[in-house]
Image 1 (cartoon, one colour):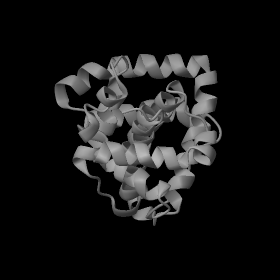
Image 2 (cartoon, helix red, strand yellow):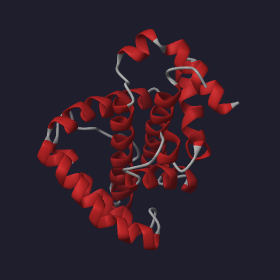
Image 3 (cartoon, one colour):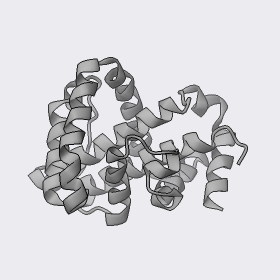
Length: 203
């Protein structure tokens, strides 16, 4: 695949997939198990050989590729999702400059990893640990990522923990996107090429 955006759109798809699930949980209290698992698994794949391997395979991030395609083709219906994505991309810029926070997150992920390996990344105990890590570290940075939804669900500790855990996965994808050369200019100058790259992955 020759498109220079090919790897970058996988990372953006990872971001879109995570945040699509955040929006879904915030509104309905329910998530899509396989999509959430691929997102959370990516948190623990720090030294993956390729962007696809971060998500297990391209199939792992296919739901996110579909969400991204709809956005790039201007066929998206959830107006809150792009705003949430931009907030996470801005937060990533702050996060990578805060060395203490980066080290704390890296250390925390390392401590949680054995439990995730044993119980699975979507186990309630793992979600609680990842959510707690996000709350103790990244959530203190500005701009804060504000998730809106149904107050009934957003008042439940288990739902809040899952949302925070998936936000950690969203930041992971944002960091990967930057590492692959992504910038805000991509959305201005590279939209058509990004859409072509997404279509190639989905073909």
